[in-house]
Image (cartoon, rainbow, N blue to C red; front, side, top):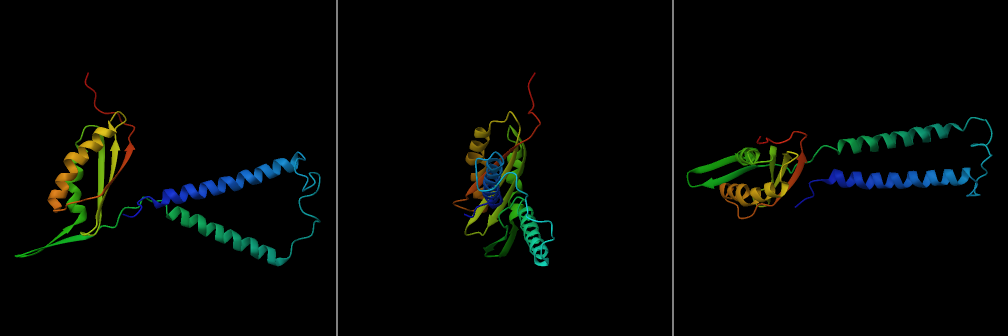
Length: 188
């Protein structure tokens, strides 16, 4: 099964690298300022002289800025939640062939899961091929919802029904829980 949350891993890696670089630069600047690192004189000017740099420096700075801008743009593009690619399933029968969109196949499943206690909303994507399907479920749970009970009910009731409806022996599933600010209904 492919990793469904590649952008999160990329974000963590880049944030750790950027944080380490910023800590090193900040430590170097503080050490130099207080004279702990004798590599640079704290009273010296930042750049020698007042002459303008050569023309190639401006092109190099512009090139680096464009590369950094494109990397930042690529990072932003990678942020939307990735869902597994969905296909149209085809069932061959004696009387002909039936085509079923994967999104249509999971609609009853999501409607059922949305009625479970503690679930505010449910979304599911059936991805992969018929030979190697994968189900990605995103649930908005209420603040006081019992996440373990919701997961147990899905694996014991909802998922077996979906597997039976699709005539699958196995259906790997990932569940992502998101919590809503709305509280569940309370008995008074």
